[in-house]
Length: 435
Ligand SMILES: *Cc1c(COP(=O)(O)O)cnc(C)c1O
Image 1: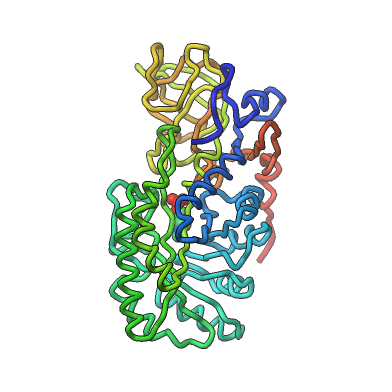
Image 2: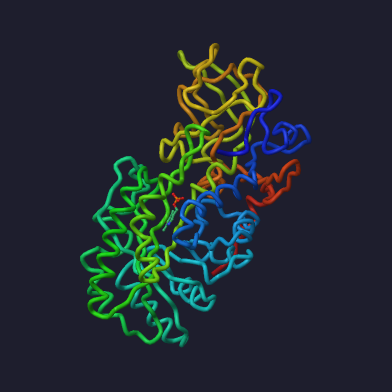
């Protein structure tokens, strides 16, 4: 569910008609965020898992605008980060650094040092050598740091895109399940680096709660075995990858997704004082934004209708990279094409199949293929839905396009939260000097 709905024949973001922004002179393309959708999604996910009293660490890589992070931090959200750059942005936000978890297979010395000095909640350890490096750096600094060991559980959801699976045997993420116990035993007494628990993120999106159950069962088996050796781990970070509604805008039941996971974890929380961390990204941020773009040209190629937009893979790479589906519809369709809801396929007469493409010089630059849409005209504004996650954050300057603006709507008010780049920005770092 999100707050992008057709009212009086035009698409609204909350209480603001979407076409009012380009009509006021805001250049397309731009990302348009609904802050109340963001708030609702955070509350829904927190609410569904509330019995576990979890810490939600929002995955900053899915959506990294500091103003949106502030909104989440204000509701108590922590942050899941994967780089020094993300740590830098999170430090500019109001987030509580003790609720930050830092994952990633290739953290540099600078990133590890920064995390220790910034007193982040936990560093997630992804290899034996990384643990040794953290020990060395924390030792030099004489600063204590808490870590979680990221377990590679050998679990695969076949429905997850191959490019975003992270839990299979042989993946670059985490430490082989069979090697984790010995590693923790050998490193349990380090004076500065305290192993507090386990982390597991098996990919995104994950289609069923059963995969979380499997990975949780593997993690609790490890903690039980270590407990018998007097090594007490009390933090379980079960990762992210919870689904978002890409295909329709109906209510997804978070309660039924969460309930079986809660059933498994609640006894550990209640009886043994386990602390649970969740790292949702897209399930909070995806439905929070649309990409607003304009039809530049319509043409015929062979028997195909091609709609050429002013946005493409440089703004939204997910279709090119993952063959991802995004619902697309005109902002102000003819009255007979106004939508009551966004279910796909759309049951309407008079639609035309379009290949919806961008202006980039690449065949992979498309947003949809053979997509039934109302007849499009040059100059029409078109919304690409569910683009709040892995949209703007993956945008690029390829073909020297400037990156778009990000606009945030709260009820009937719109705020620029990231300015559109200028062509000057494109050459700003092209500075020649001798080394
Ligand atoms: C990407 C990532 C997430 C978030 O995934 P979503 O599908 O956006 O929920 C969580 N944890 C880690 C370690 C990640 O790399």
